[in-house]
Picture 1 (cartoon, rainbow, N blue to C red):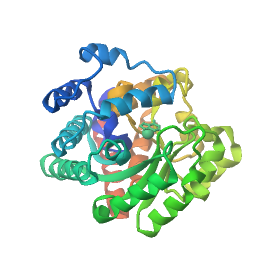
Picture 2 (spheres, rainbow, N blue to C red; picture 1 turned 30 degrees about the vertical axis):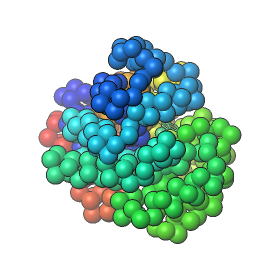
Picture 3 (cartoon, helix red, strand yellow; picture 1 turned 180 degrees about the vertical axis):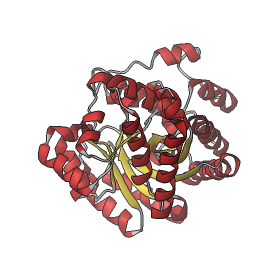
Picture 4 (tube, rainbow, N blue to C red; picture 1 turned 60 degrees about the vertical axis):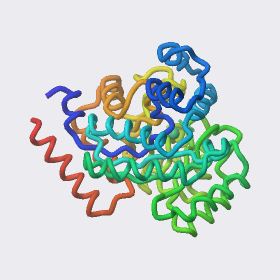
Length: 337
Ligand code: ADE
Ligand code: ZN
């Protein structure tokens, strides 16, 4: 069995995907047309050609502009449903999905419009395709603490639909410590916590996410390798890192996939996972991330199996569900050889 066929066959969970980052240009043009909104690009091909980024900020500028055509509940439903269809194709059986409410509420779109569209899509994906999901609400770290607190207040009536809070957007200059009190309040309300740290930011931001925000996972975290004490801690605590290989390549966090540290970290015992981040912008969904990084780093069957099992271990599923999926990964590999 080829590497690609093995990756396709294995069940996996995605733990780091921004729903606004799954917005394919074709759907963007369709929704813009029906909403009577204009896009500053003449067609899909020209828009796709603009997806040439030199760092995180150059991507975020286009990503926020793209999200601005989303106005109605049906738009959010269609966006998430298109993503779930990709999950079905890639044998992603469970996804923990980020959404950025402030990107929408700042434009006058109500919080419940966003949430109702997404939750309806999650329910239908479970019914139609058996794909499980959870929603994680991210605070935009370039905005103020006060804005994040207001967003948290808006989310409280919808608590049963949101498993956790996250932290995303422009990292450098906006350390996790800026949001210590917001996360404290969110955790007191029962939300789990995750945060982007160590993507472009230094290892200190990873320490802050762990010690101040008390996160259950670090999103990206690839720069943690620069600090050996931090690496030893991540390994000892089995703190998951949700790594996104194609994102790191497109945003120039690594110059080439062959230089990615995923394999090194996996071999050292870090609980690393593979994810797509913003697949519509970075050139591929889950299986493309797996296949490209596996080819670049010459990952063997055992590495791939471990990455799939890690995706369940690092998830917010119950222990029983985690064990069941890990068993399925093992059985699937046995079938394959
Ligand atoms: N928002 C969407 N994708 C992101 C990323 N890779 N880093 C930070 N914020 C993001
Ligand atoms: Zn991300």
